[in-house]
Length: 326
Image (cartoon, rainbow, N blue to C red; front, top):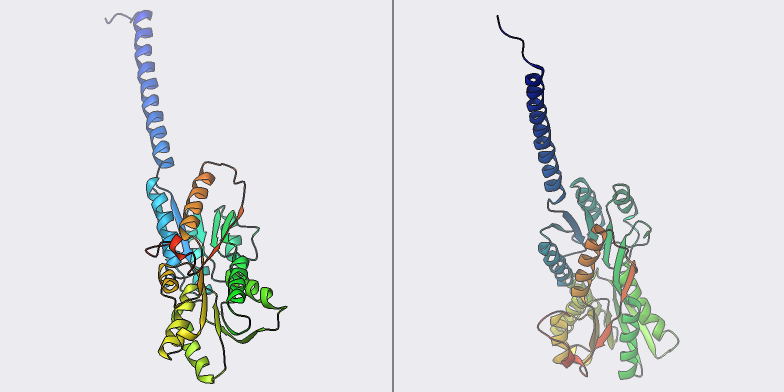
């Protein structure tokens, strides 16, 4: 007959079983915690939708953001809305569906993104706006823009310094806040002086390929003019191409805003009266820094940042590189 097991033996067996159970539970918990830690350090996804890649201004912003994200091992989904409000709204919806952790927007339209911004807000996705404002900004986490109004003012003051009277052509992009403010700053500065007269306004979306044929058509009208005030440098390049093809560029004063390498070279050569320097590198750097401050739950002290601008003329162009952006 088998002898009954002693109490001590039973206790020993229970102890072994308990130790095994605790050990197994520890391994399970350790594995679970490891997975949680892994999940929390997966690369974040940041989305960006820009007005257009036809303007290298936005390419430079994107390059700077991409550089910062790569330093953190994160991913950037960058999209070109090609100047289409409909397309940009679709892109924002797509980025939300991709569950991105933040969205950078260079808005195509001042008023048209309200529903898209609300959708991002409902999904708790921070939105960073660069270059130009949106009207419905309560759902915006941070924005950085140039002092666009002052850019127009500086162009007007330089023109008035050089010419005591002028007939002026305006190349506009009125659906963007930045384009609107630049032209408004220019017009407000000259409005009380009857020696300066706007003889033509043309919408060109800030695009060279739109500005050039519109300027060609205007030249054919035979209206006398002295100055072409352009909302940005690409439209100024289009205007200068039209003026050059008609052999009248040397007689005209062309103003742009951006400070592109090409525009600065035109200023050096005396083909362009002036451009106003913006800094897409600063925009991209600030946007990237804000993204990681948000991830770290840091307070953003200045949620609506305005970057100062400086006119570049033949007198000070040597202070700026013609090889790249500032």
